[in-house]
Amino acid sequence: MTNDADAILEDVIKLLSQFIKQDGEITESQHLMRDLELDSVMVMELMMELEDHFDISIPLNSLPDVNTVSDLAIEISKLKNQ
Amino acid sequence: MSLLDRLQQFTQQHETTDSDSMAPLGAVIEHLFSATEGSIKGRRMILVGTNNYLGLTFDNQCINANHQATRTYGTGTTGSRLANGSYAGHQDLEKELATFYGVDHSIVFSTGYTANLGMISALVSHGDTIMLDEHCHASIYDGCKLSGADIIHFRHNNAEDLDKRLRRLGDNASTTLIIVEGIYSMLGDRGNLKDIVIVKQKYDALLMVDEAHSLGVLGESGRGLAQESDVEQHVDFITGTFSKSLAGIGGFCVSQHPELEVIRYTSRPYIFTASPSPGTIASTRAALGIISNTPKLREQLWENANRLYSGLKSMGYDLSPEVSPVIAVNVGEREDALAMWKKLFDRGIYVNLVMPPATPNRKCLLRCSVSAAHTSAQLEVVLDAFASFQTPKLNKQLA
Image (tube, rainbow over all chains, first blue to last red):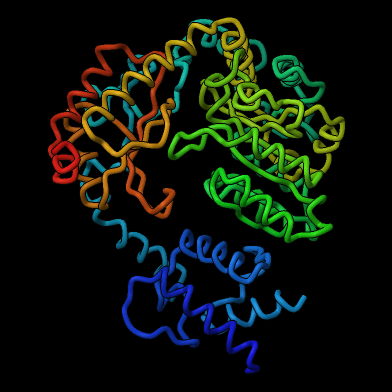
């Protein structure tokens, strides 16, 4: 990953940590819903936070292939560079 | 995991809620004695979870109109309007809705759900954007999904947040449909329509307002929040349902834009659904006439809503943010909510139990909907029941 991608991943993990119940480190390979137990409402809230943090628009329908923390960071990276 | 395994997993997850015969999700109303009383499990209940805001389900004019239309035109239309033709009643109701709202165009759908589905999916498509309030109803979400447009949420009732998100879209903001509600169905709070309209105008976007819970409830003549907020001329499309204040089933959209008529040929949920039955159309027309001519019903509804809200508030309950015919009591954890729902049931009171993720802010809610037809005595029974609960949280608040 580039430095920019690393920085995005780091920020995504930091924001994610505010949404999940579990203690311990969040890793890039973790599944957002299965491992981190995010439900649909939490995902919506998370997206709004991410949009504000990165000053981008993240349409909900752009996320069907986003499963893991890493997928999310990559998607944000794409949207930032559009 | 197989498809059936997934369904079994759902069953297991809901076992706590549905494990006995008094399951909140499976309550069967066996008999109705009036708009506000029925029997469940052989027990006479006060119904405080029906959305029957004006209590018109047993109104004689509505029943007679339904009866006469059914005798004259039959029980069903057996097909869609585009394929099988419209009945005169469909067109008459559309004219009457347009007149009621003071606009030129109106379309009737078969349910409130298909009104939102049909309008949104026909108005926007791939490459367009929808900005919707995060508390919007599932029918709006489903319409957004069906449209193929980009879906972006803004924070509930926060016009500044909407402004920020529209700014990010740049030139695409002008091909955006903003969607909000008159009264939000879970917490019963009004939309912040005046401020939303200012943002809508700034970006030249279109605005749709779902008045499902506010038709017959808000505004000088009962047209809803847009009328109450004096912004009707800035709202592009108003959708709504016949299944609440109008005491039937069906949905509609009204607009001053002549383009609304094109929707009849482009909206799949309109085209491929059987049209509303003659009886339903007739009772809805009668109910619309009553809303127009009987402001006293609205006054009674608000008197009742104020009585229940202030009574619960004085007991220290954590309630939805403003007085409204939808009063949501926040009851904390899932088990507390279920226990309280069952205690209310045992005292002959039926309210709606609503759990996350169907609720905003992950709250477990006992959702009460007030009717103009509730009597003072019925509301006292409801308040007495709530007063009898001594939850630790409530005790703490009272202390």
